Image 1: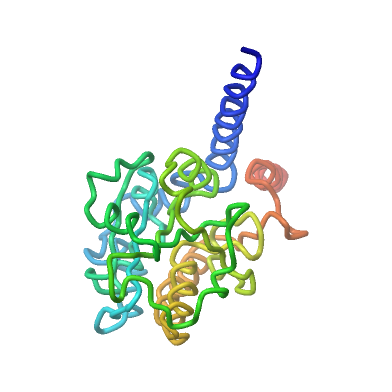
Image 2 (image 1 turned 180 degrees about the vertical axis):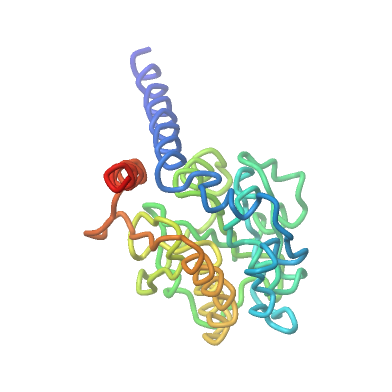
Length: 270
């Protein structure tokens, strides 16, 4: 009896930890909508394609024709990510062909509701891009392997804050039975308007770009996919955003401390 109680206690602790991490993440590093995002929403003409204010439209940074990839990509997107003005998956949607790209939104996914996901899970070649304890380096797979080119396999990527993706991986047990892969950590994120856990942590669009570049043997796709991201970040910096440092950077400051500091400075100058 004691053994069964202890076995139940561990998941409860894990769930509590995930909730606490998610609360902290949304309060400090990744609020659903920060002040700058609210400014993007209020009373401005918005581009119908990139969904950004017309004055900072980035449509010119998308490729003239969507890129056709050999690797099939399935994004499992946390439901709260869709409402974020500065999310990166919409940029990805405009860059690659829909035939090789699927987005499934939610928190806990019923596999039998989504044909592409069910078929992918049934394939032994499908991999999950997630840095779990058992994940192997993506670069250990053959370059040019092109997952999903000849069958229904796919590269599955989780999209959300880091706390949200941890919870998604924990709660969707079908992911645990799939091969998990991780990037080698050499790339440095250019998504400088969001706080990352470490300098090797990448946004969703960056993760997909580097993974597909290796799997398809097409390093040039990185520049194509990241062009709109870099432009978006540059526009935000030019319109009042500040550069966010990763949490392992010496200059990193938690959001609460940042607001407190700037509030104090404003009071002192008035």
